[in-house]
Amino acid sequence: MSFGQAFVATWRAILSHRAAFSILILAVVAYGFYYPLAYQHQTAGQMPLAIVDLDHSALSRALAEDVAATHGVRLAAVTSNFAEAVERLERREIDAIVLVPAGLERGVLTGTASGGLAIYVNGAYLVRASGVGATLKSVLGGAVEEALAPRAKALGLQTLTPVEVVTRPMFNTREGYGSYAVTGVAILIVHQTLLFGIVMLAADRRGQLLGKVSTPVFFGVVCAFGVLGLASTLFYTGFVFWFQDYPRGGDFLGMLVATALYVPAAILLALLVGSFFDKPERSTQALVWMSAPLFFLSGLSWPHSAMPLPLAALAWTIPSTPGIQAMIKLNQMGARLDEVTPELGALAAQALVYGGFAYWRWTRPGNHSPT
Image 1 (cartoon, one colour):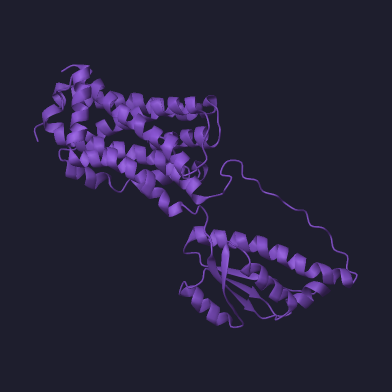
Image 2 (spheres, rainbow, N blue to C red):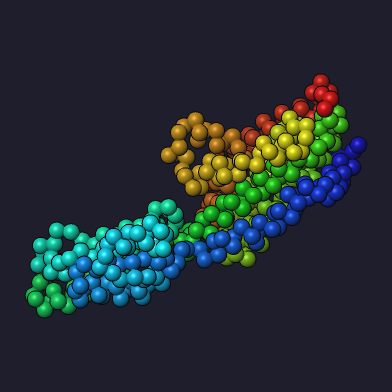
């Protein structure tokens, strides 16, 4: 069989194998629309909270009015019963409690306040807890200053103008969770669909092909899957990111270079892994748990500098880690090609190593074993 015949035969196998077709093609398209749905609002909004007002002053009423007017949160209740508010927090009816202690206004005006506002959040949902905490911090600080400034001036109190810190995000300008998560997960989806689909097809044909594949056939198979991987990557980085309005528009040529290394590395790893399975069902059972750990190992959600050294080193042996790092830098962060040289070098090394072992496994006659 020639290179071209192997290329065509691989595509026929993809299109005729129902499970592989579903993973390699249908899943790629479906995830492009399905996965971002959970993050379409980008930031958590209208999170319910309660204010426990023990001060009953003009300041506490002003705070309640400002919180109620804030888009990010929803004022569900104003009460004087802290225990009742805690029970509602534990029942997850509200996401946060703002406690206004007794004597707050007088203490702030006279400089004798021994305590301040207290914010209690439900830490079960980290994104919601972070969102409500940041919203309340910005709203309450400004509300206190605005409410007390006229009275302080009337009393002849000198107040210092606080230093205002303005934060401007450089890359994820909307500070959206979807812009952060989906852009990295999309690259992982390409990796995982290639891995699952190729391993499934390889396991299905292992008994007939292991140790019998010629060099032209091997590279014909790799190129056939390479076209599919290239199309999948461009579908996400080109169409899906535009359709979902995620950060984009970086170095397109650099992304093509990174894709030309990332896709073969993932394919050759999949061919190597597939050579050890004799049944497609076993490959699915063995690999289905991998997606979440691979995302955490990518360094996108947790930096490698904070990981144990052996775990961080292990992460760089998987194509998804340098692939996600390179694509995020090139597409979302506007990096130049020379600035992702470590990632590209890792992908090239993986392609050579995994490619060498995969070629040896599939072409060397002594590797054939009946199943």
